[in-house]
Image: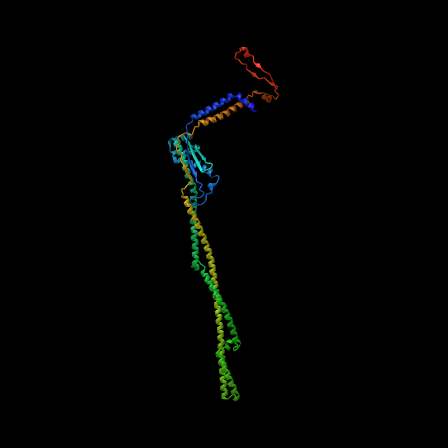
Length: 470
C-alpha cells in the first residue's frame, strides 16, 4: 500500500473516521465533566547529603551510592509508612470509614491495611533530577485532607528513617553490653591470676630491677670465685712445697723465727764440733754441747712444723673459701634462673592482662558509641516545604483530556477505516486492479456526473464518457 492508496482509503472512509473521532471526543469530554474535582497537595523533603555522621564523625558513603535516592522513594511508598500515616491521622477509628470497608471487602481483612493501600494508590513521589529534594504529593477530593496526608507521609518518613537508623544501633548496643560484661569478667580473672602468681613468687614489683640486682650479685660472686680459686691453687702449691721440702719452701725459708733458729742451730753445731774435737763422748762438756745442739735442732723442727702446718691451714682456708663461693655462685645462679622464669611467666600473665584490658576498652568504647547512636533522634531528612491545602483543583483536566481524545479518536478512526477496507476491499485505482488481478491496465474510464443546471431530464439521463488511453 502506497501513500496514494492510503489517502484514497481515508477519503472514502472519512465518515467512519469523523464519526469515531466525534464519539471519542464526546465520551472523553463527558467523562471529564462528570468526574469529581481532585486536589493535589505536595510536601517537599530534603535529603541531607552530609557525608559525615554527627555522632561518630565517620563518613557515610551509603548516601553517595546511585541507589540511595531509589531506596528513599521505596521507603516513602512502603506499606509500613502508610500504616503509620493511618495511625497518625486516626483514619481507622472513623465509623464511616469502617462502614465503607465493610461494604467494599465484606469485613475481610484489616481496616488499616485497606486504608494504607488506598493511600498508596493516590500517593505520588517525584524526585528531583539534579538535587536532593523529593516531592511527596497526594490527591484527594478534600484539599485539607490531601494536605494533611502529604504532611503525614513526610513526617512519618522522617520518623521511620530515625527508627531504621536507631534499631540496628540498639541491637548492637545490647550485644556490646553483653560482650562488655564478659570481657570485664575475663579482665578480672586475668588480674586475679597475676596477683596470685605474684603472691606465690613473692614479686612485689613489676619492673626488672630485682633481676638486674641479682644478676649483678651473681657477677660479683663469679669474680670472687675466680679470685678464690687462684688463691687456693697458689696456697695448695705452697703447701705441697712446704710438705715435700720444708726448708725449700719460701714460706719456711723466709720465716724470721726459722731464720733465727737456723742461725742458733749453726752456732750450736759449731760449738758441738769444737767440743767434740776437744773432749770425748763421755765428757760433761761434750754431753752438754750435744744436748744443747739437740735442743736447738728440736726447736727448729718444731718451728718448721708449725710454719708448715700454718701454710697448710692457710691453703685449707682458701679451699673452704673457694667451696663457699662456688656454692654461693650456684645458689645465686639458681636464684637468677628462677627470677628469669618467674619474669617470663609473669610476662605471659601481663600480656594476657594487657590483651584483656585492650579488648575491654575497645568493647566499652563501642558500647558507649552505639548507646549514644541508639538514643539519637536526629534525622537526615528535613521538611523543606510543608503541604498546604490547594485552592485550585488539579483534575479533571478537560483540555488535556480533549486533546488526548482527539489524538486517540483519530488513531481509532483510521484503524477502523483500514479494518473495514481490509474486510471489503474495493477497487479504487488502476494500481488496485493490477495488484488484485495481476493483469496490466490498458486504460481507465473516468465517469463524471453531468451538470443539471439549465438542462432537462435528458441531459440528466445522458452521461458524458471520456476515453483516455494509457
